[in-house]
Image (tube, one colour):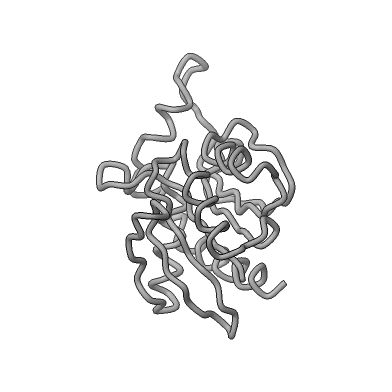
Amino acid sequence: MKLLVGLGNPGKKYSLTRHNVGFLLIENLIKTYQLPQLKLNKNFKALIVKTKLDDKNFFIALPQTYMNNSGQAVKKICSFYKIKPEDIIVAHDEIDLPLGKFKISFNRGSAGHQGVQSIINQLKTKNFWRLRIGVGPKIKSPSFPTERFVLENFKKDELKQFNDLFEILNQEIIKLLKN
């Protein structure tokens, strides 16, 4: 069984911020493929659903722990359903990639991403898949904190760039689910 996790922060205040691009991708996947809606599971501290896409069963989860504690939800889900780290796909924002670009990686460090680091810390491994979605580069002054940049809302023209990218990422998710 595989687990697809979108990282972000819960609540309307954060819904269109750069940090929530993982949530936005999952919402797009659900809408595009008319998958069942996520439901809150308080034990897991996550919105979660078991679903099927191209004959592959998997779970989708959006941790509700806030970004920096995402690993708590991921660990609880994996422990309960006996999901191995190598069967986890984590979609998250990546400030080191240009806006609208992406990279897929496996067994890599967090590069300072606190949500990813939380997952590494909780699972005690970095052997999971990552869909790193570009939201950078930060073009503010060097003294402008990264945390502030990723918590800013996307501009309308920036959001439009994700329409095509999400189509590509949905296909990449299907490939990862099949392998």
